[in-house]
Image (cartoon, rainbow, N blue to C red; front, side):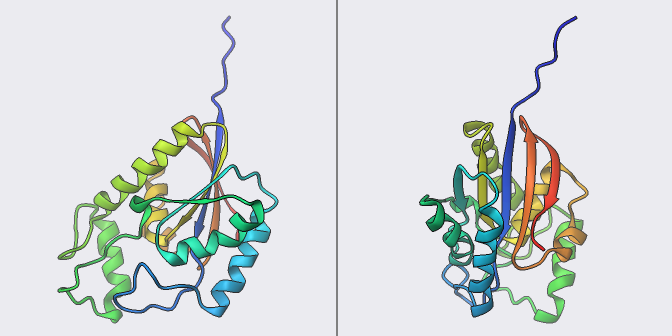
Length: 196
């Protein structure tokens, strides 16, 4: 009888960025609030107890800064990945009222092909982000990767592997948040929330 060989386990830590003050037109460059900076230290403290081989991130400043303390402590670089940027909700010429923000997000999750003018659909944003994650799962198989990310992109990547991660999950996440994902090969086998 042949012996079943277990697939190598790869660990991915999704770190949703800490608190950042919204400033229109500064999606890429806005940093962290005082509370966000304090929470970035807590992120470091939580992940110090986990094995970390590599750190990658959305290029947006708030995502990078949330894992910077950890990277500095581990003396590791953060590799920026453009396609891990947050979903573009709409173009500059399309005004999305604040009081319709949650309803608009739900609409995007309910219809994965729908996009507001100048924005990305769930399908489009998911496709670009999952390509990055799949590449790292292959290149760093059996290792541990920290991913500095955003609420939408994190949810869409999880949704690719497990459809139950949807609008309700996105709405339940906090700023910041940490999820530990276990992969057997390229199959997601377990998800555990580490942020308390």
